[in-house]
Length: 401
Image 1 (cartoon, one colour):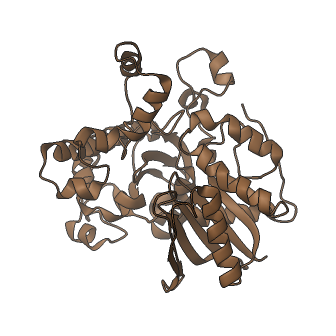
Image 2 (tube, rainbow, N blue to C red):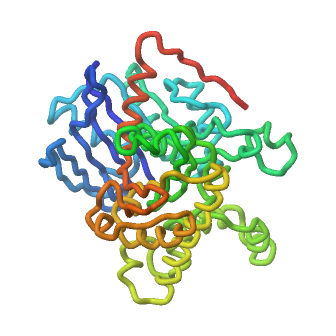
């Protein structure tokens, strides 16, 4: 099979990777991004050896939306570097109650995914935009949707539901969990990096601008900090995480916030940015001596520790704790402070290993293995895309509600 293009679309950026295929599975050969869409667009791409493949800026009108970004990136790959694609795999945040596995995209799938826009208002439209753009220009090119919710679909009913009438559950109002592609990748790596823990009880902390945690038992998700939408759980860059619904009622009734204003507030003005009053970037907050920055970091670490306790209860104990994603992989300070919070579980940090960015950062006496495992959602998408298009693969848009 020829190359597979993997697309991960955000609100103002488009990340992509090109994977070659072979008997040992997909291998990344090109990675890149189009940033500053609609403002200061810039296309950057590099080969697997990190040599520059492209670095070009554009006028705002030339790359005004995600559709034009995917055209610019695709043209660069095809016309300038002779890359051809046999398929495209997409990260799609919300699969709702309908999709429990990756699916080949057709008109019916797109119609279903449009129904889930209210569940992920900032993510889902951006995920769908490049799908539509590619279908319009290359209608016969197979595309596969890979869902952030799919990995969590095996949760027990008691963990999956809210204490609301069952009729709403039947309509799809339930706990989904997100970052599933990241957690699935970590679960696939654990047998190599920590074989003793892989089949045990593992908490994975996906700490980035979007943040969540997942409890794994024998490599399967049993609980997640995120629920119906990607607003729940840990505080994030601009999202509040867990919040009393009464606060939202107060903002609507006493502060007069409209649903649209409340949505904008919850997705863009809260979290570390709102609490600190400075920035949504942990690097800025760690280097600041402002009281708001210190409070935001304290709150972030406190909530990680608090949610670790919840997930430990779901698992009945913990054998390993894994840090991943941007903050988890790079912030030695956050890892050290979280480890302090987990001391009651028997966690002991090896400071030197932590500073060195080692895979295992727990001390010799630690009863819980502390690990740093870089995630690779794009590789997971490439694997799923190939599997979904392999001969004899069962193509089923199975409803599971």
